[in-house]
Length: 127
Image (cartoon, rainbow, N blue to C red; front, side):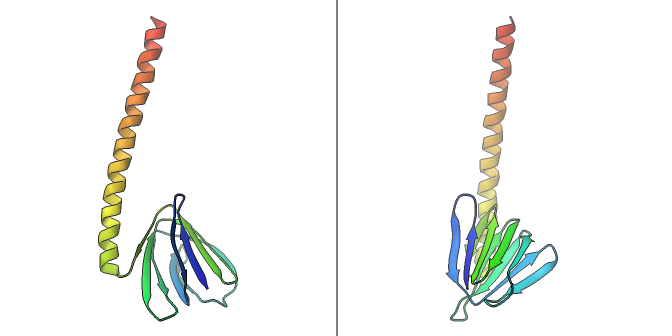
């Protein structure tokens, strides 16, 4: 089966796999190639998947949607970070969230400056 994890800005992984385990609102679920078609919400968690050679890999995802149709399993999430082992994935996710928090803080500051500038110009028009 083919596993794809996508975010709004990138294809995080696309791998041939023999099993995928993911956390949903109802708990953990495992999917195999011949399972029925399925759609569910995914909660922020670590998705584990097994490659055809038996190697287990991981990808951390934010909340999103999982769609399994035939031999295709797609997870669409806000964010996704792949990792070969849990320890390195934990560090990578921590760094990613730190970077994202910094970016969000800069965006909020820029937006606040823009709003202040607009208010100032409206006040100048009224004078």
